[in-house]
Image (cartoon, rainbow over all chains, first blue to last red; front, side, top):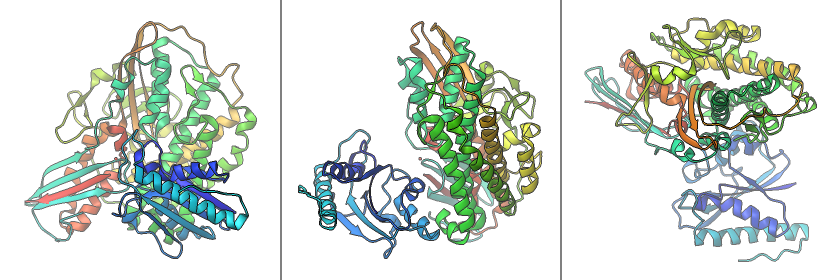
Length: 155
Length: 437
């Protein structure tokens, strides 16, 4: 099965990017989970035959709202560019621990949305909100073509 | 990390800018001059969180849910200490089955917290790995079983607390809702299997190499006449302290230090002291159930243990205790007639001490005749251990002064982790900085 996971904290500015993508996808009729990004719990969500789409905020030094996508099974994650989730043991560590324990899912596609502000109580910036629409739209379109869903994404 | 490449210097500074594998953010600065430690500062720079002020004007029934938000690792410690303080203030007697469930909930937190610290934060120090992921590549069985233990702690928490983190079931007088026996019975076989795993892990951990380092500690922990301490007991030490929670502020002093946003605790007229697993083990060994004493034998932990690096073994023993305690609680449990005791609100002040995974936590609350909080005091374990951590480093560094800077720095980080500091509680990363003049 395909598992869509949006990580982050919607009450901490741009950190909510992944969670907002999950919410947008549910509005579009797709199942998507919201998750804090805690690595140990994250690893428990998937089975080894699942296909996982994981969306999270990232800090790579790119412009705010920039979207990067990559396959962490073929290309292990760079610790320095992907560490802005809630705690030090986040999605990167979950994927690398799963790799060490031979518990990786069949496929993982990561969408990283460049974030800048993580202030408690702040809303995400305009660039991140626009990126949320783009990412939700792309995921919905990809899945709709494979699952024949009637999806009309925005953005 | 910087200045960590020059070997065998007699003077200078060691610093680790962001020390990983601790809960929260802080830095450590160690200044050396001619092989002597001139200064040690555990700097907790995370800003004060002002929870005590936040509680002013709130109703006491809100306290367990607000204070549990202080920490994602030990929320139950905050809830338990808060409700016990308020219940002591109002003279509320809780149902024995509610007491049993509270011990089980606390045991779940000990399992989660201890397993996290033993394997994910501290074991990499002993085995020479940078982190748990690296350790897991070479020790997949140990890593997988550690994850299984932690998951069981999370599951018990979810059943009793409503969710795995920041449980929402605890209230003054009891619980909002208590489980049925059938809710708990599926945990029995899992707990039995987990006990076998935890005993086997005690042997694994006992095989670690421990630095030859001992200190004449004053250990402080709760002591109950017949139980290994969790929720209640008198506060005792190996140097004659024996007080009720209401006397805590007469005997313990919190001091501001310039370099930290957390207060330093000392025993009035004396000095630093140690709280946590090693203190509990040394003061309460005889009250451990047989299976936990067996775990201590397996890993080679004996009373008295004055080596702080062996705190990892005390955590392993306490993990066995906590699993056994949860199992015992399920077997004895029958749903209480009501989930919580009834009570009359009146103006009152109450204090309580409970045993958080990292050591004692003290709370005091005063409220008016409507139950609105007038004053609150929360003393978490990490601020109590903070001065002791600095004292340990002052004594430990000379014994490893001949080591290259990189190794010296690594060993200092390991020494700090002996205390499993929860810096988020004390006021998040630990930076370590060591200077040689």
